[in-house]
Every structure is written in C-alpha cells, then in structure tokens.
Length: 247
Ligand SMILES: Nc1ncnc2c1ncn2[C@@H]1O[C@H](COP(=O)(O)OP(=O)(O)OP(=O)(O)O)[C@@H](O)[C@H]1O
Ligand SMILES: [Mg+2]
Image 1 (cartoon, protein in one colour):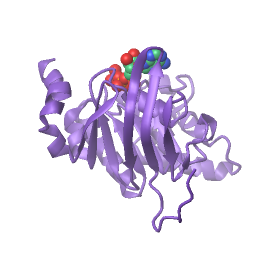
Image 2: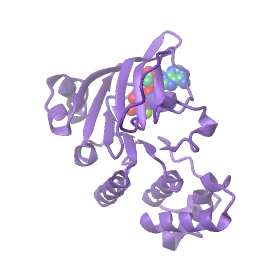
Image 3: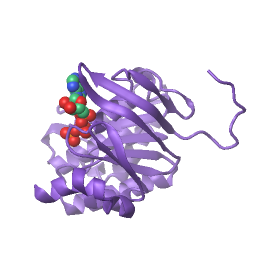
C-alpha cells in the first residue's frame, strides 16, 4: 500500500492492472492492464478463447486473479453481490433472461432491492421506452424474437443507471438494423458519462462505436489504440481480423 495525494479529477470507472488469471495449467490472462474512462467506449476484441470473457469475470469477481488488481472508481473491486451498488452492470455472453417472466418483470429484477417501488417502476418504464420495448412490457420474455430478447437483457443492465457497463457480445446474432440501433444506444449511454467496456466479434460495430480498441490474443494485450489504427495493425490482422476474413 502506498499513500498518495488524492487525484484532482475523479478516478476512472475501471482500472485493470497487470491481471493474471490461470485455470489449472492454462494462462487465460497474462499481465493485462487497461483503463476505461468516464464516457469512454472501449472494445475488447480477439479470437475465441483469447480471454475476453475472463476479463469480465475478473472485473466482476467471478474468477480470482493470481496477480493484479481491478479498481472500480478508484476502489478495489467489490464482491459480485455488491457490483450493482458500486455502479457496475454487465450483460452475459448468453442472454440469461427469466423466460417465463414478463419483459417488465425481468427489467425490475435488478431494482428489487430498492425501497421505492414507484421510482423503480418509473425507471423500468423509461428504460423500456428507450430500448423500444414499451409495447412488449407484458409479454413473457421467452416468447420474443431474439433481437428483442437481446434488448431486454440490455435493458436489465441499463435500468440500474450504471457508471460502468460491461457488454459481452451485444451485437452477436443481430442483423444490421438492430446493430445500428444498438450503436445508437451505446452512444447515448456513453454520452451520459457511463464507461462502456464491450467484448465483440462484430468488427464493423466495434469500429463504429469504440473510442479505443484493445486486442487480446492468448491472454495478452497485443495492440491497443483508436479503431482505425488497430484495424491496420499487422499483428492484429494476423491474430484476429485475418481469422475472421478467412472464416
Ligand atoms: N471457468 C473456466 N475453467 C477453465 N477454463 C476456462 C474457464 N473459463 C475460461 N476458460 C478458458 O480460458 C480461456 C479464455 O476463455 P474466455 O472465455 O475468456 O475467452 P473469450 O475470449 O471470451 O472467447 P470467446 O470469444 O469464445 O467468447 C479459454 O481457453 C477457455 O477455455
Ligand atoms: Mg467470451
């Protein structure tokens, strides 16, 4: 522990420092460091198995790093159960919806701890309207088409008004129109000052919404920078974009 004078500006919503995560003999993350600033959208890309979801799991205290630190708004990352109170929301790589519950009920789940039901309902309805889900509020989530279910999952993450939003493959399985709407939503959320970290395979979407791109390969950061620079980085083309072009 070192004592430092408090910084003049607020600490970044997310700081990941020298993170090592191993599963048995497999090094899933190897010295990963990055930050996400307020209002910034950072994309974490890389081939399958590169360690992207593991970064999310480490941030959410679902896996214990062998070394390194995660700081949320300047404080050590809280246990999973206290992430919401710390201003952190995430969507899962799968949908993770309660299929038999209505859209509205799904979105109310993260607010169940709040003591003001009227305020919760108001927030839920505002979020549903923002994601063009108002007309579907009473429908069981499991009966909706995939793009709408995906938006319900996003609504559930947004309804808590997070300061840090982690999105694992938000564009996965979506067509162009839905991806364009998603890009709008991400921009609006970031525009309110929320820090967004997104894992995504959809390169055009990443290039569209990300202020900065971090490329992971075999658990290591092999490149980072503005989207257009990262896109043309030869190491990245070899590790990731080349793979995509070949598939
Ligand atoms: N709980 C776990 N136990 C054992 N190995 C794991 C576990 N979670 C992840 N791994 C392994 O760690 C590596 C990184 O996995 P991770 O899920 O982070 O990759 P990813 O970049 O999210 O891949 P994808 O694009 O396929 O989602 C992979 O080799 C994976 O098999
Ligand atoms: Mg993953």
